Length: 393
Image (tube, rainbow, N blue to C red; front, top):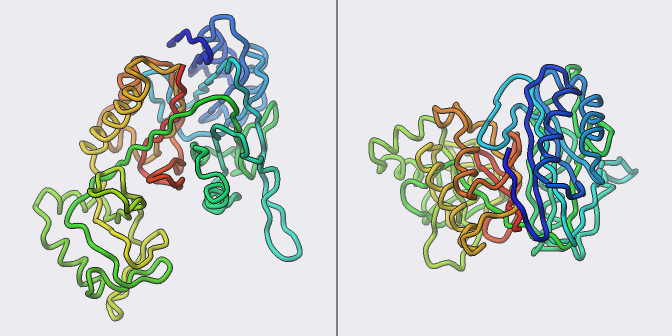
């Protein structure tokens, strides 16, 4: 357990692998409460994995017994992390708690409703005056991309971070937590006021090959790259890769799309990374998992553990610099369920990197089925990233 004193924000975290869900929640929440050093728990975020999802209501009861937070959200997880530990399988509960000082947070549950004409999303808060949002959607029942576009257009300065729930109950139902209730669909979240949140999005893929300009495209389909058929130009780019880069793309070929074209040079964090989802040899086109327009700059990407490690540590170092070198009050971490031991070959990689990068500040989170965070001033749903919501003290 890590403890940080702060004038305005205090954060505590706790994690437990006790086999009984209620007991595990009480243990984790008690650790988190100790980190608040007597301050009131204004908000708690809870992640539960394994068999504890079958007894999620009992786990939430345990959190309220030990911590009694004013607001609570959370979700089912395929794995959790707390402190310098990552628990990628088995039964675990992690609790992140915060005392917000002069700030405040309001929990919400957004749901999709069917009308006569279309599907509408209800329960979404107004972000006017908000300083940040944590969002935990169910991946199968909520239009996350649509909401992010709408929020971004209306409130581009409000950071939105979070992750898609990655754990489901034994009956296949979703598991989102709002207060003492477990709901099976929609999205839960926290709307903050008067609480600063520094977003940190670290890519899990490295740029390789040349930068290419899209010269013809429609929707998700790229027709031309640098004035030539897209598939032909892509094959040339792959042919020009070195042996190491060719080995990297055996893990899957990705395409990075520059979001902010105002920079003179593009670095790893400037690309929105998406998978190549199809190709038409006759037409010479390729399809990518995001809309692309003519004039966009793209570059091949590949999953790479070394690059992911360096990018995460560099991104965290920038946040520490922005804070004048002092540790923050704490952080919420949303890391891709495709990272972890399978990507890095060691246990606890992202948890340890966050702990080192943020000076041991208390941090907790989960392995998500998709991560939410800003790139180039726009908020997207990502894959293979480690996305961190840093809370200054």
